[in-house]
Image (tube, rainbow, N blue to C red; front, side, top):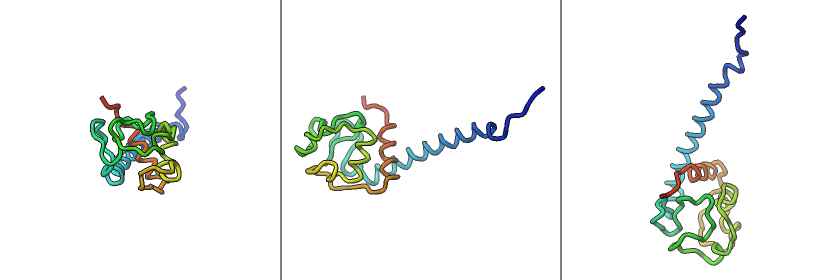
Length: 127
């Protein structure tokens, strides 16, 4: 005897696809936000620092550690290792998170911060 799947179980594959689509949309949103909010001061190319340090492989990196980048003593001595949580707090209010930082731009919108962080996390490691 063959039994049909309950309707909720039949929808699970569609829900999984919707989650994947949302993640892809968030990555695309993050890339666009990076370009409009971050790229003027931060490159993605590890060989290029701008006003701020490059953001290639930023997740997992110690703050103030990119060779050749200009940092304040406060940033070099912050003890921060960048992850989603520390990036979120810093982007929300850089001068509160690291008093004495030279970064003046804050991003108060949590959704935008999360999209940018997701974009940076999803980038392949620099070679």
